[in-house]
Image (tube, rainbow, N blue to C red; front, side, top):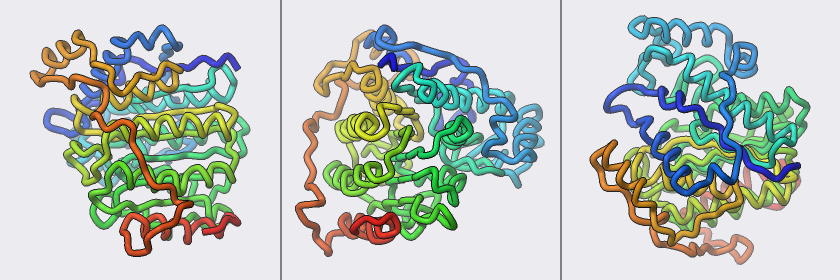
Length: 390
């Protein structure tokens, strides 16, 4: 391998726009791209615009009738068929929706292809991670499930083991559904408990079915979980499963909506902890997947203060140019933030909680602690199915 990293980017992805007032504001993508540029990360990696996912690629995951419904809604948004989840409050139809959704999917598929071929070790598409879209329906701000499409393309190219780790605050339900019975794909999702957050799935008892039993893993975290608990849960579940599975490629989804400022959820995670998990995923890719790492964005609705910084750290880690937590945010970028949003941008690159500590699971657990109960429920549901000790 060359050891180089690749950033998937086409300015047209900012056209993924559900309209004024919708939480999925595309300014989060534009500001992330500008912050990546402000740190000079472009010079440390290749920046590539992949072609949109074609119909044959989309149909690796999505039903033909659904793709046709998206195209129809894209041409005439007022006539969107809500039975497909289109034209709803969460997923309003807009002109050109099919084209830009296919473009975002194409970036994730292109990332997977480049990593599988060995052109690069790591590839990042922070416009991707649209993990709620189902084979036959839009859901949760997601039209096409680029994460599932990237994994399906890897399988098509010959991959026999792909691990998917999703740390978005919402359950990665669409990816889990796509590979529910497929033992070639290990899906792990850490998310806020379904009792308190959309999409009300992701219980620890959801473990896959048929030949895929034991290949779906869900850690349902109590509302209010902060840095130490979030990192404890991640390290109590993810590394052991990835080590056992030995994936040929690691695909990760890094929704920034776990942050304590996010308006749509109830976890209390800092940018420092998000960065720590990004570093951990990078290390897992090198330790168990030969360095092959596809990293995606996802949710995140504090679009100025949180998302751009979180995903710029992700890009920097993939590029081998980690940004120290105490680094000041470039003033030119802060000026652009104000010009675009009339908001004051953040002054430094994390929330000042570095280094973030947590208690290792191996040191023991407290059966009365809600976080430990969540971890234990997952380990008891899945680990024995994979021949591991709960």
